[in-house]
Image (cartoon, rainbow, N blue to C red; front, side, top):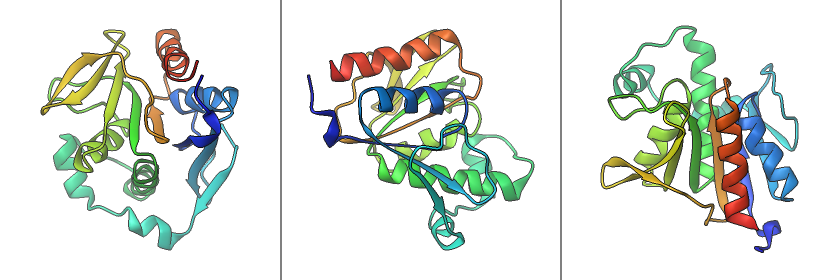
Length: 182
């Protein structure tokens, strides 16, 4: 069994996948940090770091760039910008990135989760996604998604994903921690 006290988990503390990742981090006694901004409601309130406006600006990227990269437009630009800025801090702190959602035909991942995955690719970080439609894990390798059975093997990692977590998605997160830390 690995010494879990040497690991740190970074997330946004929102309902769904981020809550399931956080619950597993807590179960395994892994240091958990949830990034947020003033006025944002979290589901997990363990070790919350409220980012200042100055901190948020470090993760600022043009919404045009994000929209182009993700192949979609975003409404509520002010709120979603802050969410994307929080995602920057999660990915920047957690070297290895895990997400739960849906891999789209163009190789992006659906929703805000997709921005975390894209940042991981930009930063050349190991990134794995559990696709809830196929119920399989995929890891980004050689410019494409390859079916995989990932493990947490870096002492800092990020967990993010859909708010609409299925039982299969929850089991995939539980199994990831079991494979990695038992």
